[in-house]
Image: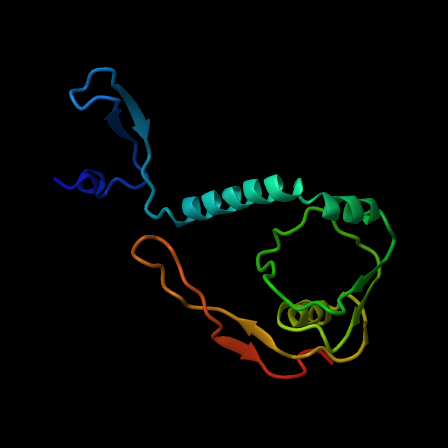
Length: 169
């Protein structure tokens, strides 16, 4: 029998299962579990936690960020230097930080900021956070959307969307 078949139509319901070290049932115990309909969030959490452990082991955490950002969080205003930002991942959900500077803001930009380095100034302008000062950004915003999950739960990504030259002027 397929072991997963026993869990069909049980998502969100309490189910009792017997687990133990021996096939004959000796040393086993019965526990209550609540199956979930989709484990993507759990896999993502495991991936995030695993990456945090790797980064902490390799770099002693984000000490550099904490050392320089949080002592500034009480400031009345901020100048964000976005120059030379070659891009990378951005934070699409707003859960990337726990502190902010609420006063006036200004962002310095230049033509060598691209991809995610274009997105941040664009969002800065869109949400009217403050003026943008400097040269127009590169304009090579590139992103990935719409890739299916693989059979083993893994995923792939390749650039499949972009915004033309001169994203932020």
